Each structure stands twice: as C-alpha cells, then as structure tokens.
Length: 76
Image (cartoon, helix red, strand yellow):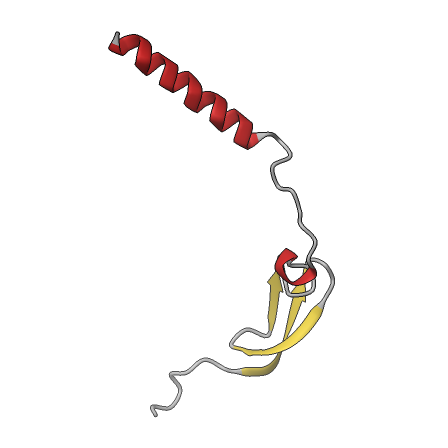
C-alpha cells in the first residue's frame, strides 16, 4: 500500500442519533450525527409513525382526479 494517501481511521467514532442514543463505530470521521437509528426506527421498534399529517395523499388523489376529469372533457 502507498503511504500517506489513506484517511485517518477512528476505531471508536462516536455516532449520535437525534433520539439520544450513542454508538461507537469505526469510521474515517471522529463524530457522526444521524437522524434515525435502530433505537428509534419503526422497523425495529414496532411503532408506526404517521408521516401524512398534512393530507398529502388526499391532495394528490384530488389533483389526479381533477386532471382525469379535464382529460375526459377535452376528449369529448
């Protein structure tokens, strides 16, 4: 291997999640901040978080139906 071309490797890089959990991993960065981890991820916890609080799905369906009805009117 060539010398002085590889980044410094930290065996115990501190990884911190938004939920407050901390882990030690090997990385080329000394500290890592993540938004979701195994401690708070819905797949691992079994808790489902509803992300559609603004009714985005319903708004999309309404726009789709409105577009479809316009297409039918113009085709006649």
